[in-house]
Length: 214
Image (tube, rainbow, N blue to C red; front, side):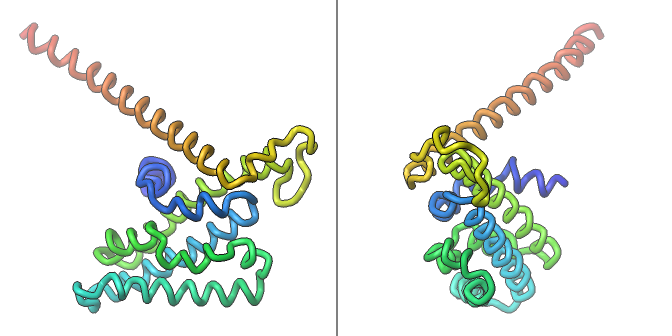
């Protein structure tokens, strides 16, 4: 549970580590595209983490990054072929950002920082929680953009067209929404730090009073 909380909130790869922005900004105009990207991203991240963890003692340190890219690219190629064959609509929605998963900073970062140094189970869990954290951000942004921008969710009309803000379907809106998300996350972190500091001060005060009395 702590690991899940870390990946989703306290160490979210997008909102806290500030990596993996490109696909979040580009593939978040529709919920279907965001869900497709999230599942694709998790597929590659989890499986590449597992394989890199299995091979970590056999990959020479000097070529570890090229080796990681080969592993990741293999899974992306498999994913592309499967989506093109069975889920063509999602394949078309993701476009160029599907092959660009190969060089996604989050996947390369987890391979380098975690999977290459830890066991298979831990690496799989790390891939899952970071994938969920990424998915949480891109899907939330997509819900706001599609619902308020087009008045639909997954293509189903929810709001009347007169109540929509079409600007939210434009690429620039994703920058604004993500900026708002970052501001909210920073405010939450500041509030948590303030509460922790106040709690610490409350715990220290009785101890100091007791020491003075003695």
